Length: 321
Ligand code: UT7
Image: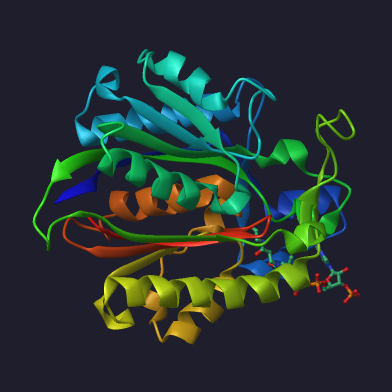
């Protein structure tokens, strides 16, 4: 059978890390509050000249190197972001040009924190149907540029970064590597719980992120447990079969609660929210690449990816590495 095989990953962070203590000098917050409520200790913030496309390009270059695949052999680039360089064209086309692989398919995916899961599932479909043969799937964000730095309830939670996967359509055996099952969902009813209060066709401004954190938290735990259950059922596996869960990194307490609901031991959950904070669409590939780099995730492992974010949107993918 044809599967989309994950050939390599890469990630990139802005140069500047900002600790909770540094934020506490500028706004009415404290290291204790942020660590206790979220698990976040620091975040990376893009400086002058660092953009969503520059971070995405750096992550993509590392992923191509890890995969041993040349940029000219990529015929699909899908970039998940809610903070594009420009309203149009798609940031994916800027990355394509930076990499020098013009001519294939390139477009952005807007599903906020679930964007990478949406991009991964869509790229998998395009690869399996033969529309493309080698894909770069990227999550990249500069959320620091849409934060209201006067709103302590949101500005301490987010950071900037990028992560990328190289996927290749390959003929594999039933127990071989590749994307096994993906499930995606959206429910537009809850727009007012997590949104940006601007946009080209409404205010003609970029706007700022607004969130009712407590309500989002409740929906996240329920929706994630549901989609993880669906994905495991469809794949015919139990929680015990999973080697690693690589979740969207919004809040350490959400990661704990979701793992507990599924009966998954905390040691199997990759946690990077302490270092990266919430990097929206970048958080899943950034966390995955971190766990590959430090030797935790290895070829043959069964990895569950999951995310939930604005929309609401949520999803999960089960991948054999
Ligand atoms: O990525 C997309 C998905 N996003 C999420 O999944 C986020 C989900 N939500 C969360 O992670 C949590 O709800 C937060 C971390 C956002 C907030 O934690 P919480 O335990 O739900 O706190 P809260 O919003 O209920 O606020 C508790 C208190 C409030 O004070 P009062 O009203 O109890 O006196 C806030 O004013 O904490 C106060 N507070 C802060 N204090 C110090 C809010 N932000 C801060 C802050 N520093 N930065």
